Image (tube, rainbow, N blue to C red; front, side, top):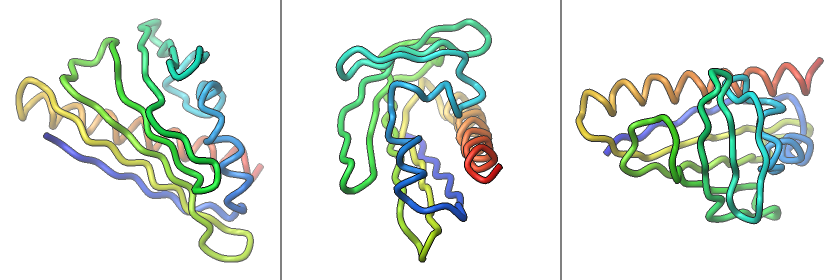
Length: 136
């Protein structure tokens, strides 16, 4: 089992950040690795920019706590298990922090290590993109 966590500070209030992150259907708007996204009930369907589709299930969503958790159903990544949580926290007047973490398993430690690097890069790039959008 592998685990990763990416934390990014935002000079923007938590409600504004959550307004984007908490909209689980439209992640393609701020995650550069995703070309399109849509959601039917708790099942989110994404298409990565390379054309590969994936499905994720929103397993928990709490607007009051500004957090949601999703799991990987199927797609191009060789995952045996994957669950990820995104949380937005108010840190001070007008500022916030986003914590995006995941726990996952794959067929081998080598595959997990490679996926950890790739997923960390995706999370970091997405949070950088969102930061740029919200502070432009």
